Image 1 (cartoon, rainbow over the protein chains, first blue to last red):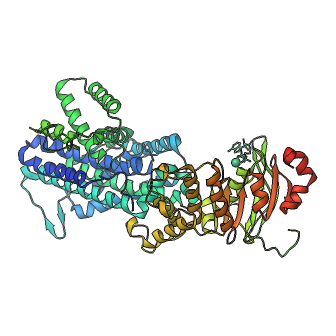
Image 2 (cartoon, protein in one colour; image 1 turned 135 degrees about the vertical axis):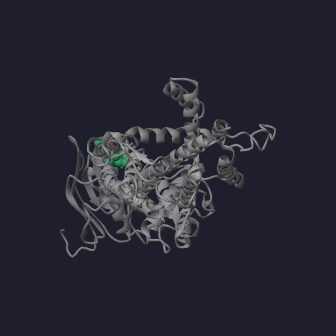
Length: 347
Length: 253
Ligand SMILES: Nc1ncnc2c1ncn2[C@@H]1O[C@H](COP(=O)(O)OP(=O)(O)OP(=O)(O)O)[C@@H](O)[C@H]1O
Ligand SMILES: [Mg+2]
């Protein structure tokens, strides 16, 4: 009788396809070169950011251009906590980075959420750029040059993962993958809760929700802060991956890129942004190999994808049940064309 | 104001709302008593929906006050007014078309009643809310529709769903904006019976165009023309009111 949330797979097959995708991602480092493992980590972090933004865009119907700022801010928090030469454990840096990003989002949301639609877009952009300029125009984070930091140590509950230097990127990859899977499952759970239903109602018709007696302003603020904290987790991961921060990771284009990934992967599915981020990262890589005019190629392909696939990549159905002969060489099933793309890159 | 102490549940005093140069609601003072069906009639553009929006809190008045059981609620935001016992339906059907009927009503119940297990529990497990939703559906005559997708139902059933959604918060005051709008005869009859039953245990402010119906069911009525109250009183008195006959009922009377 109770309806399944719109953004989650409706069938067991759908969930199975997601599980297969996750397993494929987990096996990837066993076959891929170190370079491609690092590329994979970059893609997973992009997926983390896009997924956190989906809580606003696809779930609540809030399109923000300030989301990248919370991501970048969290990366800088890692730099403050764990400067070059004195690495700190992840169980310390991750919660603090998320907390600061979440609080910053709460503060921004308090003002920005008074506006709607286009104005909300502009106000979030303005706040995001303010955070950008704090790090761009002052010396507190190394200014425009950026700064190196000590990558947080993978350690929790008294245990430390001590890998030889060559294997560390693989360790980072698995931390990112674990974080992505946990985030997805947590959001999937959130969508099923009463609170998740309120967000869904707000996306469809906020005015009606108010008339029903819902404090939509408060619900949006909670969602905005939560999304900010999750963006912070992604930013933390970025700092851990690169060991370097610069203002570029805070700018508005980071938000725009995440929005593109959502669009490419599909607004109507919680896993859409993950597929979009993996596809987008793969695409940029391939485009970079083929031509100098990387941005042009990217732009065209995305434009095409959005026009041809209005529901994004996650909206593709390969009729795999009706016609099993559809693509026998595609082990990933119908939901993961992007992972194919990444795999091709990694072969 | 005149004969105190008032038993009024909902009362407006000199309520006005301007949109630029247009005064949509002009100095309206009216009283809604408990368990009373108070009909507001008036031609198109008379300001009836604007009045409902003022009472529900979706619009703020330019001047005047609104009190609920003696308390000033003029500037209380919409969502809190629901908690204080005011619920409304919309002139144009305004339901979540892609959700099930049950989900629509459960969302309404959830807004008014803190669920026993908190907001962060599975919506399927919030039994208390689901029970309330079923009760409201039953009262609105839709017990059969719980698992239907709202947007796939007939117009009449969707209008009933609007009512069920207002009932889920267990309000004292119902503001119903043309609940019979666009209905066929059979649907309208069913809705009319429902409205009469609701008036036995709610204060009901009913906006309605169908004069015959209003004269039949209303305990009290107010005629609104160009935002101004032309007449108010018992249906029989209003029917015989010269000004009303002249300005509004015209051919009807
Ligand atoms: N938000 C608004 N902005 C500007 N003018 C408005 C607004 N809402 C209503 N009006 C105007 O106020 C007047 C009263 O409108 P209202 O909708 O209250 O009338 P009504 O009595 O409900 O009419 P109907 O019988 O057609 O539903 C109309 O002239 C309308 O154009
Ligand atoms: Mg109206």
